[in-house]
Length: 321
Length: 274
Ligand SMILES: Cc1cc2nc3c(=O)[nH]c(=O)nc-3n(C[C@H](O)[C@H](O)[C@H](O)COP(=O)(O)O)c2cc1C
Ligand code: FES
Image 1 (cartoon, protein in one colour):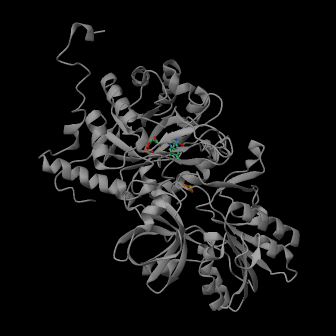
Image 2 (image 1 turned 90 degrees about the horizontal axis):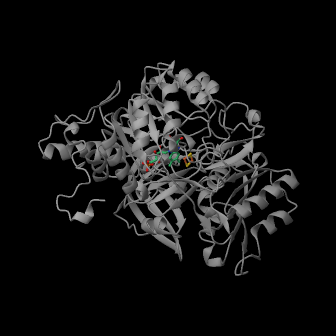
Image 3 (image 1 turned 135 degrees about the vertical axis):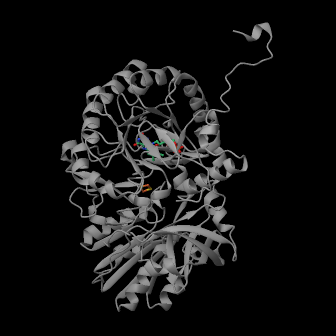
């Protein structure tokens, strides 16, 4: 345990209780094992596993990564061994992890999501489920689910019916009105919302006159998307009462605080681990310090404190519409 | 191939020395005895950016002995410029050693092919092999003679040097692979590190001559530790280096994607499907 000297950073997300309010983003942290020899997993909160699907997926053609200003594009394409192999060969290893383990479910139909969730939820090694309705990097209907409130609701209801475990629904920023989708997910039984997944993007090689990614398009992550993510958390927090796991470009304690103040109860750190795997540990320590300096005993005291609404006390008549 | 590293740690290392061997080619030496102890030839580190703002940079481990390890790199962008600005007395943070490294067992007569700063990943295997009594030929190519840095380090270890430069300022005027393809005195193993086009030619020569070849690949990395599946390269499904994945035929494919940072960076040339 880090010495937090009386400051309570604990969070409760559905039934999942964590000593620290930090998740390691899906697809960015393997199963935690890859980082375990140099990061004390007991100090990071939770690892969200790489998304798993019903059938094995080879993943997207290469190149799959492009570094861009203040961020990166990725198009991994959900490379994973499929749920059968995953349950047989992988899941047992998670029992020994000293942190919470959140399984991530992806699919191409409502039935896929329900099937994978049901099978994954039978395992004690998995503490909670995240439903990835928002992967931008798969061909065909990549983001159909997260972009359509009704489809999101259908997926969430179907998954909800398969398990009592904590259910986090991960939303896409690539929509017109994220709040309406958040409301549907809450009504359909989500315990929490992960906000946001990556922002769709593209980069072109001007010498070869070709897209830089094998998949042509990709998902942008890192500091470049942080203001988009903070706004999304702000809007979702006004629309729902369930907790939010804020994410998108968090690299420093001050970044993390923006998300808490906008209304997130917890945060997730993905791309920043590629810069420095010590960042989550640093943020946890500095969050405690921030609260201590202000005589605040718990993180919960600042959640949503900057979420004051859009109203302006000084208005002209014409400002209304 | 060698087994996958599990000994990676984050090293907070004091920079001991910095040399610019040629314009833009920098060697940073640092104090990291714990890294030196576990490093195998062909492994790399991820250098954490001093500013904390850019992605970490993968760098081959150039030297490793006693307390001191070093990395060599070409200054090509912001990330390497930031590292090149470090001086003796500064600190650098590195995660490593990472990756598999070269397989050097039973190698008696080896040709090592290096292009440009690819030389950074082949000093350690050259030293290990010459010290084990193997015959080591270095095929070393660069744009111009000033960029054939540290070739004397290899000859003083007992390597035979074959050089090529694009401008003919040293050795053969042309590609280093020209020299490799011309020799009739065949090695029993090829190790290669350098630009991808060079590696592809090395793979073709190895196949034609029926020589086993190990190629150290470069890819864009994000995590560098096997956590994101961003750096993959296609391998034949039957490769022992293929990650433990289920039969891929279900996708109608006879390749699997292996992570260059984890299953690699060193792969058998004949198993690559790139
Ligand atoms: C290389 C990479 C792979 C990712 N894979 C997944 C995935 O499989 N499932 C998922 O829900 N999100 C995935 N994400 C999204 C992250 O979990 C995270 O939501 C997003 O990157 C924003 O946070 P960040 O800026 O801190 O990385 C991936 C992101 C990256 C960079
Ligand atoms: S760079 Fe992340 S798996 Fe290789």
